[in-house]
Structures are given as C-alpha cells and as structure tokens.
Length: 396
Image (cartoon, rainbow, N blue to C red; front, side):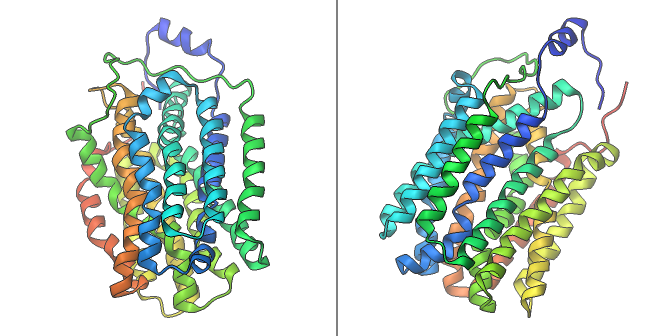
C-alpha cells in the first residue's frame, strides 16, 4: 500500500525509529495476560459451586470494567505512553486474576474481574492505535498480523492453561506464577521503547467521553457476530467440551487453543490477501467460514467434529475486528484515537459481555445451542460489509 505524501511529512516519518516488532510483542503479552483466566474457568466454577447462569453473571464484572475504562481511554493514552499503559495494565490484570482465584463468593469474583476490566480499555485502544500508526509510517499493512499475535497469546495461554489443569496445578499458583513471568517480560520488552508518531489529522479535538458516529455504528454491526463468536469460544469452549463430551482437561483446553491457533494463522497471512483482494472480499469469505464453525459446534455428534468447529470459528472470526479497527482509524471525521476508542467501546464490550449472558441462555436451551445465537448476527455482519473498502487501495 503506497501513498504520496508531502516531503516534510516523509522526513518526519523517516527520522522516527519505530518498527512493528514492539506492536506484535504488546499484542501477544496483552492477550496472554487477559486469557490466563479462561482455561481455568471450569475449575473456578467447580470450586465456587456455580451454575452456568451464576458464572455468567459473575463474569459480567470484566466487561463492565472495560466499558467504564473505554469511556475515558482516549484521555488516558493522551497522557501516558504505550509502555506505561502496558506495564500498569498487565500488572492490574494479573493481580486481579490472582485475587479471583482466592475468593469463594460470586460477588467477590465479580469485583476482582471488574478491577481487571478497568485496565483493559486503555490497553485495547493503545495497542490498536500504535498498530495503526506503525502501519501508516511503514506504508504496509500490519493490523491483521498484530491481531495474529493477540491470537497467538491466547493460543499459548490456552494450551498452557489446559496443561496446568491436566496436571492438577492449583489455580492460584497458576495465575500467580504466570503473572510474575508476564510482568517481567513486559518490563524487559518495553525498556527504551519509542512510540510511532500519530497519523496527521485535521481534527485534533479529544472529547472526554467517546460517542460512536454513524460510520462507527456500521462498523459495530460488522463486528458483532465475530466478537460474540470469539468471546463465546473463549468463555465457554472449555466448559462446553467438559459438559457435552466429558473429555479430559487437556482436550477441553484444546478447544480454546485451537480457536486461538487458527485465528493466529489466518490473521498472520491475511494482510497479503487484503492487499491483493481488498478488505471486503476477505471479510466475506471469513464470515462464511465462521458460520460453518458455529453450525458444527451446535450440532457436532463427537468431540473431534466439535474441535473442527472451533477451529473454523477461530479462522472465520479472525479478520473482522482488525479490519474494522483499521477502517475506524482511517475515518476523517475525528482523530484516529477517538474513532478507535468509539469502536472498541462497543465491540469489545460485546466480546466480553455477550458470552457471559450466554450462560443464562445455556441454562434453558443448553450450552451447545447457545452458540447458535451467533447466526442471526452473522447476517447483520454480511449486510455491513459495505463499510470496508471493496478493492485494494490504488498504488501511485
């Protein structure tokens, strides 16, 4: 993707020492920390004696914290650098998760997840904004590869979490041990880190509270099904495998790991296809793959087919949110940070809020068929594809 720029702008960019590597590291560690909870949700559910609906209600603490922090995330990132947000945010997440493993009351579990969620909003906006800035400066697409490393982080934490469960490692030791490793890695990785310069923007105002514009709401419609499908797989795939097929903890965790792994593979190579065929065509193909995965999960008669369904679900949901975030950052009506925060404010809360609510649905229709709720939202996503560019950007 090449664009003609004024000489002064090119000179400013060339003088700035930035690369995509810190962005990839940030996405990986962010996902690894955030995802530590989910492979052990089944163990926490049993330890606290919660039903699916009670667990779902407790999990609402996380998206509630995210929503509150997203309202002011753009203000926070205007005062703090990405490295500061990463270090503080990940310490908050790992400490909150460790506290969550120590409580035995749903209300206290809710509060610990609320604290974790409060750090997620600024993290989500900061890493996506940095990816967009680097993408602009390098004049090459990296947004899908950035999110690929998010998926790789979830794959790593899903697989390692499944292994911890299989070995019978207590949840609190798992969370505390992994937390120390994550904090050490983030401090080492971001020592001396230099942020990329922002995109030029005619509008530099930064409102305290971010309201979605009409264009952002169309992008929200595009992302809803993918965010719900991905969030449902992260929250419920382990419990789904345990309850439906009575499989071993390692196989249960493999459902989450496969979802994240196929997300990683698809996202890593998607940028080349987006450059060649355009965002709209790539997103359309992925939405149909995701639909096939949801149907497989809903009707699978055996656990290998269910794992195949989760793999399709991961691959199909992979590019929708990254492409929408890239489109939001390129809108000209407001600064990129504001539009990214506005999209994240709604879409990311769907990612975290809707899956817990699926627990309430699962109480009545079963966890297997709760996944089918993604199907009508996929139709909305297909109808919202016009919000993405139909063809590769013109080269000059």
